[in-house]
Length: 241
Figure 1 (cartoon, rainbow, N blue to C red):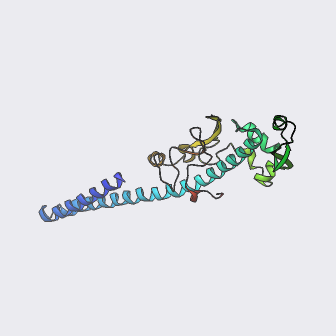
Figure 2: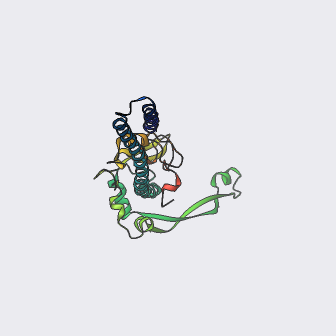
């Protein structure tokens, strides 16, 4: 924006100079100077247009790439949640996570309450039978993680790959505990996703905190700093949520 404002100011000054020349410069040299100045105006106008047009193009490319990355991060999140249901924590590397998706089965359970003899109270009450309620969890069956989450697709095998931007780039995956709660985070630097674009536009995007866009320097899901399995993007960017 500063560049655009500077160019517009220069154009305005140039037009003012053209007017001043028309009023005060001798007629013999006016044509040459006018041609040079109008050439400068046209050049600066072109630069202004291109600076705006490049940003429009960048935003279109950015949103398209973000959608690819976000859909892959959602696959990672869904796989991690299934992993936690079975193992009690999150996978700290993609080898564990992919192997789990390939072979893992999650139990389908049913909770039910039943009455049983409370031996402690029965003894305390001199043999008078006293009952207590307990909750039992019955395993009804199991479902395949691979079939449930990916429905015949094998894209889980490459879920570690960013898939766009810098060639062969991979997500960073972390997992651990935060105040006894299991947490995980999968992320990629925006510069990797936007590889090949103008550096000043990438740096500007890394400072973004728009509710509708992607906040911060990375595209991520989950967090190692709070118990959270959400992504740092607006709803319009995901095709799965």
